[in-house]
Amino acid sequence: MTHPGQAKKHRIVLIVLVALTVLMMAIRLSAGYSALSFSRVVPVLFGQGTFQESFVLFSIRLPRMIVVLLAGMALALSGAILQGITRNDLADPGIIGINSGAGAVVAVFFLFFPIQPGSFVYALPAAAFAGALVTAALIFLFASEKGTGALNPNRFILTGVGFSLALSGLMIVLISSADRQKVDFIASWLAGSVWGTDWPFVWALLPWLLVLIPFVLAKASRLNLLALGEPVSTGVGVAVRKEQILLILAAVALAASAVSVTGGIPFVGLMAPHIARALTGSAHQRMIPVALLIGGMLLLAADTLGRNLTEPDGIPAGIVVALIGAPYFVYLLVKK
Image (cartoon, rainbow, N blue to C red; front, side, top):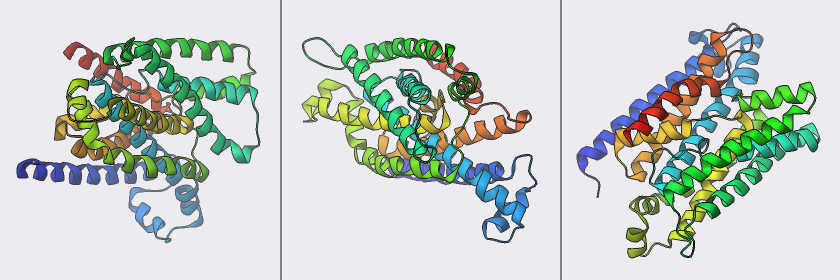
């Protein structure tokens, strides 16, 4: 049962975060080198802008903003799931190798399996999901205790880090012999340069979240029990292995769908759940909605800063997030 004071605090946190997210969205839509001022965003959204303003907003900035927001939410939710399952605040889809698994298959797919441009936007998330799924399955296999099959949380993290390094090396080998144009794309992808910025990428990413966010929220009570450890979960009748596999599949799908359109974005899945937990407590029913908003806002802020710091292409959002996230990771590591 939630204490009335906790419920009130949770509502206040949600209201503040929603307001900050809306403000960040407005800043993102008005920030850039094309003429569209902050005061003109709302009128143009309601059809009261010039042709140039409407084109800039609806064809360039709005789809990119939605993709970045959805990707940030997906990475945050993936991180929240992994941290709950492993009972480790350092778990993150980028750190434990899921992003690298998706990236390796994306690199192979892009280099060796050319397809029609119209189906590329939908095939890439599927390829990324396949790579992330195989990687997660191998990590799960190596991190399980022999005989019992129980998941060892610490081994899961360390095995994931090893896979991440190995797959990053594989990607370097793959692109070393590729032609310059393809190398530029994959290098940009690895740096976290948001490349899926058109409406088809929004429609490719949105269904994953529409399905998986309600699914994970429905599993919030199971995540609470799994976070207490396997003996407690088993003692209250939770099918631990089944729940772990289902939730890892959800985490993999969320991370893969996000990185397939944004590139290798690190640390969002690490920071957002941890900050949310500090604000609302460890109960996943309260923590997950807050983590979603924080994840979307973090990536929006990183993309806004990166796009406007330098001309003409800016700094990839993944690099901006890494500059913030790396010190935060070290802080958590020392704290743990």
